[in-house]
Length: 278
Image 1: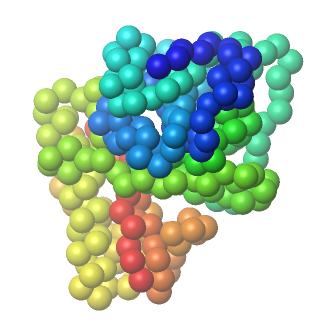
Image 2: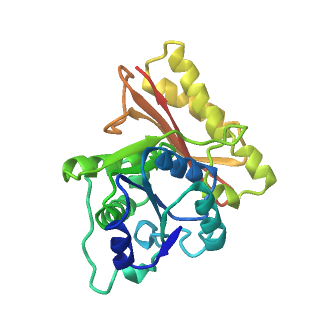
């Protein structure tokens, strides 16, 4: 596996890499969910690049940029074992040199949910992903369904800007008890870790009601809130039942929908979602 710290090094590798090339963008401190993305990319491409960059422009002033977990050696070893060909691990000044002011505004799909709670977050996400796509020029790029709104934002950007890349959505990887794998799970103590399963329990309650014929979106939201409210260590931020593509909140579920939520458990703010089929 080759390790690159500069754009020039990536482009030199890219000029000789066997086609097709797959890209997995990450912020490091990798877990089995990230590994599943790399293995998917490995199975579909002759060359696999992974970026490892804690992107400062997607963190708000009160968020956890400084404390975000980092372990480069562990990540390097995991990626080498997973079959990564290129690890791109730049410093912030490499991707945001002095005077870099351009940002990508993806529009309405970035406005609700995480966009409403974290102003500027998705402009930071879209900008760094666009930069990585331009630097690596992959045929396919791989993202997890766990960050569903991020996935929609990137899909919309690729569509609207006519980018020649396929965005591959990969299933959420979960712990045996259903908790979605997340770097922020490391913030939880044992009692909080047990309480955090309330997210998937609430989502499964929505899915069960939907499968049973409930189509009133507010009743589905209320069902999730009842589960969340019963967990004393959980504090609900939002519960959403929205159109699966636009993320506009629904009155009735008549087609594909996304049930999603954000919940505070201890100092961790956790998100999760399930797709509701038509």
